[in-house]
Amino acid sequence: MFAAAPDSCGVYITGLQDSYEKFEQATGGSLLPKSRIWLQVRKYMEKEGCLGERLTANRTLEHVLKCGKYLGHAETNRCISMRLNSYRSVVRGNEMITMTEIVVHLTEDLLSRASMTVVNGRPTLTINISTAREQWLEGMLRHEIGTHYFRGMNNNQQPWNNVNGRKKYGLKPVNPTEEGLASIHSVLFRKDPFLWRAALLYYTVYQASHMSFSELFQDVGQFVKDPNTRWDYCVRAKRGCTDTSQPGCFSKDQVYLDGILRILRHRETIDFHLLTAMGKVSYEDVDRLKDLAVLHSPRIPQFLQDRSRYMEYLEKIMEVNELTDEELKMFIA
Image (cartoon, rainbow, N blue to C red; front, side):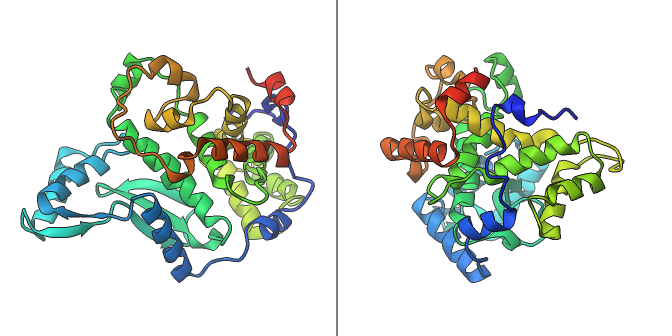
């Protein structure tokens, strides 16, 4: 696959003169035990109103249908029917039960730090406990729940909530906006919001496009000393390659830095509240589509409630990463 060179994104790879280990130590803190992961996840979900609510069985069935489509991937009728029947077998129609909005799984077997998917009709957050550090966990929750999940839920009520709707209204691809926004939210309130990980992912993909796996593993070693961490970065970049002895890459990991820089470039003109409320849309489509959007009771994360504070942190990200508007305007339209 094609991978863009760092220069085409208009930025030197920020912070790569230091090692991943120094970055991890300075910004991540210690690894969390499972008990503290659960505690922080519960606290965040409660803050965002995702912890669950008391529902009748009939309302629970409606909830399953709604949540089962939150990313725009509706289950088949057979699967939905099986899911609803499983609830009917447990509770009677007017009986009250506690319905958790998001299922959370902890695992060590995950290539990424976390993922938000739909499993058996339920939004499911899977967290990689081997990367769950005390200063990074809430940022990951803002990334997966505060961005992906909320924009997905808001997308359900829009006229462009399926493939045909997106074609009808001429929507641009959801990326790089989606992952760029989520990546910004990952570092939003950090003391030192370095874009180190997004930059390293971008660099690794570019190098993979003209290196074998073994060459890539050696090359990334100048920044990542730990062989297990380095292996993970290289595997991500070579996903789908049938012969890893040849140059080639899976280029999706470049979308994080690309999206971050595009959003920062246009931060003064983007309505971030609308960008979330309108669902899975590009920032470039917001003005054109806002009069068509359904904006009744959208899910907006807490960190977006105070716009001035949010904008201050975007400025801090610019400052810490030594990015200037002049540089961004030079390379991004």
